[in-house]
Amino acid sequence: MRQPLVAGNWKMNGSKADAAALINGINAEMNKITKTEVAVCVPFPYLYLAEQLLADTSIRYGAQDVSREDSGAFTGQVSAAMLLDFGCHYAIVGHSERRMFNAESDVIVARKFMQAKKLGLTPIFCVGESLEEREGGQTETVVARQLDALLELGGIDALANGVIAYEPVWAIGTGVTATPEQAQEVHAFLRHRVAANSAEVATGLRILYGGSMKPSNAQELIRQPDIDGGLIGGAALKASDFLAICHASEALA
Image (cartoon, rainbow, N blue to C red):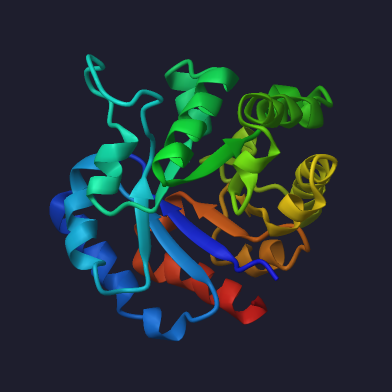
């Protein structure tokens, strides 16, 4: 059975004091979360806080992006080795905001994934479609293209014990959430596509829902057979909301 994962993506939010308070607030109830894996993906400057405050806890932490390069003249980028130096476990790759605002292609995202994996990080590989693509009936075509770019570069073994996050772009920060049935349909499609290459990898693959999961809809979404937790945005910035999602997952685990 796949262990559910609830991972917070703080995006570009908070201060040093906010970050410390949020980490401590989440950790205060972790003794009640025993079956769900919990992680936070914090802004780069606050990785040192995560390293200090989460060292002896069950909460894993990671970054919101990672370079596709080992090192060198790449101003502003952060390498996988640097993230590992701070004790990171996860790195988000291919988030829709990176794809849209930083022009990251499917190939660039796939290279970031493979670089992170090569160095020992667990990449959270994001896929998803825009509102225009969904209304045009292109959802499966889009997520298949994004997934296939990774499979073509790294092969099916790249996803062994991996994590994918399905984030419908039309449901991020809009207040609109995919219905559990809509989300399950895409999650099942992704798992079946992986299974066509390896049933074993597909069985172990965790697929998170990343489209405005919140306390009010978390349990209904996570109850779906192919949804293994959530990549949480806005609700991850308030400890009580994030913990409510963790508890919803825990009740179903």
